[in-house]
Length: 357
Ligand code: ADP
Ligand code: MG
View (tube, rainbow, N blue to C red):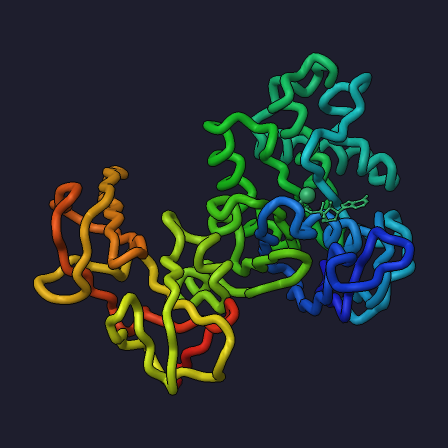
């Protein structure tokens, strides 16, 4: 296992990149602690696979360095980095049995046969594929092929890091949650550094202790699931994480006073910076319906099980609120209240309110 450091990483797929828009990765600086469970979360095309492939050595970055335990590995080929990588689609040998597939990464490294049998049995039990061990891989369903592919990534116990690139894409939805919790359990057992790439917030938040949120070739925030939920550093994080995401409302700001649809709004703390385009961020969980507050009209009510999502118009702007218990009717006139401690200003996307520690 190893600590991983990415320093000043940039990558462009173009031979002569010019502006920032020519870079798939713009500037990445990260420290991944030994033994951590990390998720790399962001929408399709934001650079997640590019970053993983740079860590594994399949790609050489245009600029910057990769260090494992302070050793520079930037120019080492993949097979000298001691990494296991599980891809989005199964990578297995169709002509081999499941057992042979699982054993392959170990045989390749001349691990003694007795130890191989032990590891294969362990991994097969974990993935619940014991009864398939002697089946030829070509006969497996796509689900099971991917399970075996994951097993191949997990079978070695001497790797620096295990990386998963959207490994559950081809897995049946009802199997997904099961494999997800298995991976979490496995991480707790082996304490290998694991990096899990996904565009699915639920997968990221259930697997990882630390989530790295990426947008457009950049890291926008690194934090625990709770930190990302409670204090998004960027409107993108607020909107991308949560269901529904944070309300991002256009406001005007003047000398620290913030006005939303003609009403003055109290914020969590003092405003920092000036100019730029300003928005107010508040999660639907912290918007309530009260006797007094912003006048609004209910446009839509969705019952989502334990609570309702109420969408109400304040002037021309829609605001979502999560309401426990009885929800108002569509068309009703209501008053909305924003919990002050959860109401923040964003300037050009970045958080612009300060709270004293
Ligand atoms: P993600 O894994 O987050 O979906 P990728 O790392 O695959 O994102 O892609 C990041 C950006 O780089 C995208 O704009 C994508 O089109 C581009 N890209 C990815 N692979 C290549 C490649 N081999 N050649 C050129 N452009 C690529
Ligand atoms: Mg990808």
